[in-house]
Length: 490
Ligand code: AMP
Ligand code: ZN
Image (tube, rainbow, N blue to C red; front, side, top):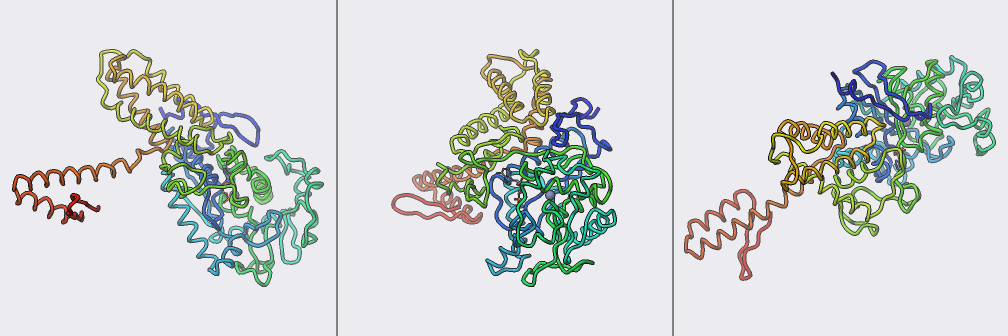
């Protein structure tokens, strides 16, 4: 029996507004698409929260026995500085400011993103497609939408006809916005006269003279609208209908709403069964965002190099801090909250080590299988990591009591608890022991050898003292004797 058959998974589906039982379209296979970063600047910690949340979701689905195809794109074209189809391409703008090729910008921030994700122990997706690598698929999708009469060409650009679409469909189905209110709220901007209606959005934009990222199309030399790439790439790799689509809450409108309209407009059916949205990481109560300067970079956290921090934090502590909040709740960042998480993380890791060394008795003094069911009940309730972690801390108390001889655990229960706690802590929450613990031990071992060398010299055993020096040197550890003692560098 697969774990997903034993523990029924409930997910909060944005489109229905309900918590629903997750039923895969074609179990054990699951298709999941998550909107990836726009690679024109370093990812901030808020972006990381969204990607780490979906990493945990991906990991849990795999752990339950599903075979997940996880697609997360790289937006390397078409995302304008103004979401209302105006302004410059974010990547082209950065390239112009830094006097680099747009693809140099894309490459450098994609590499940065991958490095940061690896530090947070996030698994790579199964496919990581780029917008620029899928221009043809996007053009084909526009042709289908035009054929279905839901888009129009204007001055070499192509716009989605929202009003026409809304005659038979519901533009606002995901974000719960009322199309009439959108009309009132939308701004008339320069150049918008190309649109029949201010609510229409660009599928293809004709490039101006100075726009460097440009491709041929039946309509003009131009570039695709930002929303289009996700529709085209999710359809290509996951099919016209797939299980899960995710992203941060801020993408519900217009991005995801437009994605739905494009998919329905080209294929005729709703693309996604379950829409999952992560909530925002905040700083001083306000959404963390690069544009407002209200943000922290992961590297600043790992080095402690930011006035908001009293010290550096290990990536695993930061990941644990994020796991202590539900993905759909806001989470406020502070140095105090992180330092509380650090204590919790250390306690949990210590208990994981203790667990394997516990003495066993003929019977357990606690109900271990109930404990394990409790973890899964929390995780299968819309990936409720904070509740699962709270339940694990109850187990940590029990583990420590067994260690102190105040409680007992049977051999079988110990094996079960170890198997499930290890799987959930390391494989699902994606935590790892802090690797610098191992590094901390090396200087201690070297110091121990140097003390033995001093002792050998005192005893006039120069053969031994020279041997220690030479062998340390051979493995690249330099030592320097001075009047104050012996120093070494690793
Ligand atoms: P972007 O590169 O701006 O498209 O953002 C990449 C992802 O990060 C999107 O899914 C956003 O919703 C998400 N995101 C942006 N800011 C935050 C934040 N403060 N907290 C959580 N997720 C965020
Ligand atoms: Zn997207």
